[in-house]
Length: 219
Image (cartoon, rainbow, N blue to C red):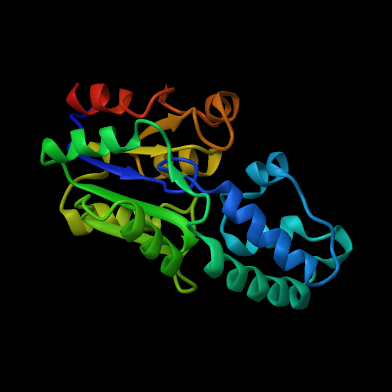
């Protein structure tokens, strides 16, 4: 394994537990069209591949056509704008992990499938003092994870070879992204999906506590 010189993070389900605000926003959007809500268990599976895919999965099967997805997506975005920080909180141990990596002067960045505007707002609100070198969310013109474009772009901008990165994420999408970018794929067991999915996706290492990442980057 190469010496770790930088860390790339997923956001939702890795640094922040955002699922309740996402659930409340999406259910409110669904309700505006007369569609039934879903619970936390379902949203843990819906999240991870971008807001459009989240909405598509949440809609009734016979309503997943492009026009309805577009209309419901607009409603969900409006609802999320009202409540994105109502219940969202950093996972226990995340602040200590970020402080420890920052103290090493090791570059950190975020690559999320969350829309870029919400990604920036969320990071600025919850981690105002963390010196992230780059924060990249989903933009229409860029490919989403598991395409490694964003991860490789961040590595290039930092001037650090991808194999010198640890990538921490909580879903198979993150692990696939890390592997496609030739980064160390570290699974966050505390996130939305759990250990089995991370193992099946081929994570190089799975950690159960955010602070365990410090042991990896020091290695």
